[in-house]
Length: 444
Image (tube, rainbow, N blue to C red):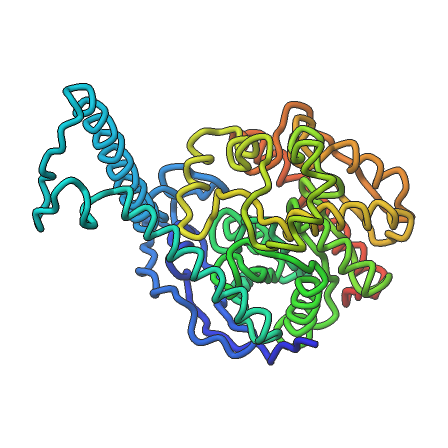
């Protein structure tokens, strides 16, 4: 069984790269689990007093674009290079067709090495480069898969946490569980900052194959290992770094909702004082599932080639998740986000997890706030409503926001303020209730 070492980290005032947008003082701890070396963030520049005077909104478009400019430009440059190669490839094919129409005569290719009739390998041929990249990618993924299989428990996982500076009182602890293809250092980090500014000590972990953590990209063949990682880190954070005698909560998005539910089911009642499910994956929408034949034959593909990106979905995940176009582009600009098809074994595991959870809804006893977009075509809102009806929780709240998509943070500003304002109010109300029940000292 994989075990996490004690979490050690470095305190950075104002934060690193992704938190240069902060306008109020916050401590960001970029930490490591299982002997990760120092995090790959350079220190941020000092925050000026003029910047502190500005009002900070959760999603200020101009500030976010400035904050992510470097990585965005790198991703943009990569996309432009790829488009250039594809354009050259199309021109080459068109020219060959024209040559064939002129009589099919063999012509000398214009290349640095003077290859004739294409008999020698043309190193400037975009198609050749594409094939080389494909072979290199397959070899790299194979090596990564073998290293994961033969080095079980040796993956390095990236973690980080945020706490407000005095005089803000810490009223509770909040552990964040991100979703499929997500990470803790992009949109989720802004969410974490929002909760930290509301008085919570917030921690988060990149799942295996996500963000800065090791593992084959976006590959989760066994959700139980991810649950183990989350429990290990969250318990370590609460024991060693969070304020004592304060209530503890979970916040989750998409697949993270399924993981968070499994965490509460495994640890039992009393381990957590509340759980927020934001667009939780209690069931995958029929509008997004693979076509009917493949869904039922997926186990065969997963058994033969588990990492094959063969599973088609009915639409690109970012395109059907983020309503605001600039936020969709910003999500795609993350250097660590993949837009490729899900891997066979991962898709099979996600479907299995949904079925497992649907059979355990009655066992859910933790206080719940279920928030879901009414027009979510990724995670079925009907399954969230079923969880609300069947859960044994005495304290449960359901908020289905009509017209909103899967990623609630991708909505217009006024909707974001409304949704996340409700979440903060729900958390603070239960934190105060727990403190009152324990004579002012907090609970759990």
